[in-house]
Length: 359
Length: 213
Image (cartoon, rainbow over all chains, first blue to last red; front, side, top):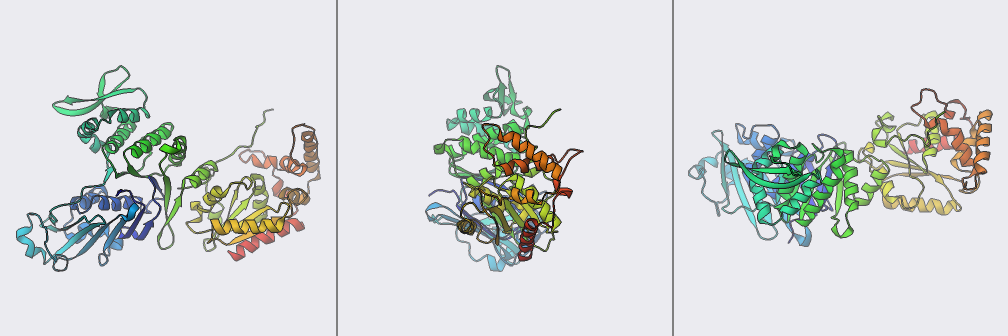
């Protein structure tokens, strides 16, 4: 049963009262004006793709520039709820082929209501204080998969610290995302080791050469005892990837992540950032080819028309056999809701050819 | 003297504002679909004279295989995510009745939520296209003579297959397309007879679209 999503439904999350994306493709590019919910859509995918890992939900606060934990449970999680209205649950439902469904529900309320049972609860620093937790506000994550997998987690802010009780077995993540180039490069030695172990280093090198054909090899060297990913240009010396251009580092981080994934989702915010327009076609081509080989479903955002033109060109340059399905989805604010305007491959090609606005 | 070999084209994505933005926020935007870029100049001029605002003008480069392009226009964010009212200003070709049916069927399939108005020009081969309408309403006889001479000249070229009316229209309207020149001649500023029945008919159609939108 594939993890790829064909349909995503989001209810009561961030700015979405209700949002449904149908006919999702292998490569999905989200466009739209500022503040329509592109990032919120990604956050919903993070919560659904790595369910019941409570730390992710508070890390999203941090990525948004907020404190990871606020003073209270309500302040910490209420921004996840549409209009901060925690009276209704957040519901994120992803459906795929062969009837596969994964559903995450997030509720906020009094512990006495949401802590109903402790079946399968693992050890937790909170355990001795469970009865105290029943007296305060908590959030409850519940996850169910059509394959029978399920999980739950209950979290609260207690004394300024995160307290969590969860089911003893949490689902493995089916997503990864490009959070920051710097962070991923810190993890690059481990990721590159995984890539080498999987015998995928050639695929990775070829991918990076799409952005700079002079890059001839990668290797792991230690600097001050710390493993660091190095690359060389032509016959030149090996240099840490960190000192190369931001575009190289960025694409390297994507490819490292995708190359070690399989049957999963990969999220890239603002795909064009740091990449010269002339390299965009090659970057798209290697990104979608690599993703197809690894059976990874891509979700990317862009504000750039050039990035959409390049996507169209890269996609059409692939042979039909190697061409993944592709879709551009514009989120558009109308009077009282966020609308979804999809573009399939043909309509995107016509729009680009006719210089019609898409974003 | 240097001369541009083709008119400058400014991609839609570069434009500063749009016709829709100038319309009344309380009225539905209209997507005016013409067949060719030249047609837009005339229809836009008539709409401005008729004070019909809130129109986004687009051309489709003829009809064959254009479903995807039509959808791209209909989905343009300038319409705010709402189905636009569509005003199709197109040639009737040899069978105007069938043509109207075809257009109705096509848009019902592509844009079922859009209201459709069709201004059908009489036929494709005889007189009655937009350029005929334009030329009939022209008042600058000197410039018309000039356009005639241009048409005479081009018609002598063995490879020429263009209709005379198209050649005349192109010659007459050409200066209009150099939009960024400091010195320009615009046949739409003063040399068209707005009271001409053909022009009035088109103005009435656009006003009807606005009233129905």
